[in-house]
Length: 162
Image (cartoon, rainbow, N blue to C red; front, side):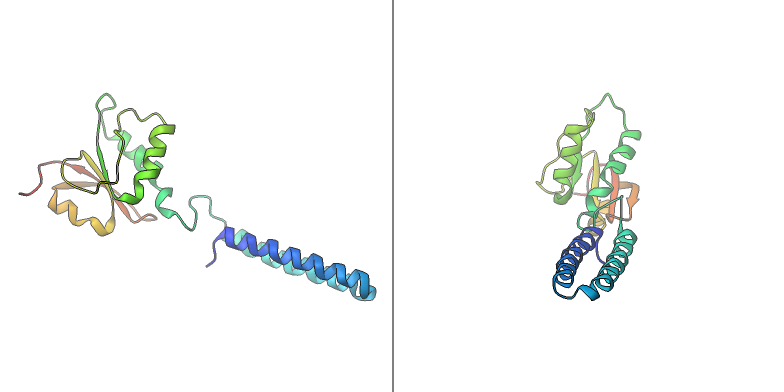
């Protein structure tokens, strides 16, 4: 399935070529001009139906990872004491979006995240499901699972295995 942005670009290209073809018919083949206009409107309407079918307001086709970070931060905010400071261990892919939300929203309890990798000692973890072996290695409790981004929010409850 194509993304809505790709589909919309295709609609714009079809519209451009339809306009050129209609201009040619208008200048050289006037008796066929009404048929070319009707055909152009049909093609554009057909492409717009495909575009409308692929619209997704929850996430983009290219970055589904970022779509669930606000929900994760809200869930995390509900499970903490806002007067304390917390660290969040993350996969590298989440660093830009989490730091963006930390700067634009009031999350004073969240310390800045980094791309140094996932190791022991964080209060919470937000990792891709491929890294869920950390749950056993670091004695984590799963708080929530996010299906679109294939990620898991976990809480650290003990020291890691030695």
